[in-house]
Amino acid sequence: MTDGRADVSRRGFLRTAAGATAASAAAGTATAQEGTEGGDGGGGGGPPDFGGFLDQVGNFDGSVADATGQDTATVEVGVNANGGSFGFGPPAIHVDNGATVQWEWTGNGGGHNVVSDGEGPLDSGSAVSSAGVNYEHTFEEDGIYPYVCVPHQSLGMKGAIVVGTDYPTKSSGGGGGGSSGPPEVPNSAKTLGVATSFVMVATLGLGYFFIRYGGDYETPE
Image (tube, rainbow, N blue to C red; front, side, top):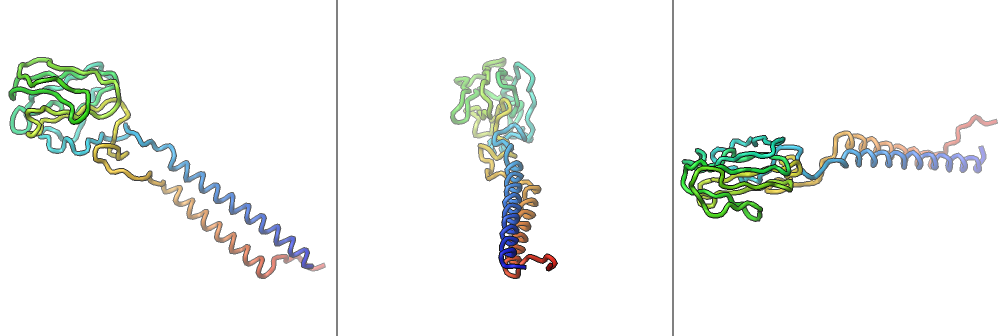
């Protein structure tokens, strides 16, 4: 075997090894991207995240009343909760975008009102005690709308309206005190990443061995 033939064989091997390593790395990157892309950072994929807003509400058990598919939904004002008639019933309700929520006073617990917690569209005005539908609002944007009865807020008279499908959820960690972080890499992408690294190391190791000790093992003529 001549030195020229050995050099050619080595160069050919290195070109092949480099191509295989690059292909393995590209495949691993593409699969990892497929695993992480497509996960939406919005909501609608899990339980609404109220950020602890309803934790101290006496009649809230963690469930959200489902009123989707309805043009209107009713929330009672002045139901038995928080040591008296100081609750909204249900305290949390889910409606479609474009639906109208009507707050119907029971006449119990004195004067109540409905006012957004912080910035928001809800404001029924001064507290009233008369029974009947005293306030309504049509929701035209997805999200979570927390609200309170101002006179009885300290007693835990709070509620929330979940609208549409794009709202913070506990799984997405969005908004209102939920934990946020980078998207989790699927196990399949992790496994392929390990395999790709092994192939790259093995290929480079073989390349070094080939260069160091030669690699043309053809039977001499």
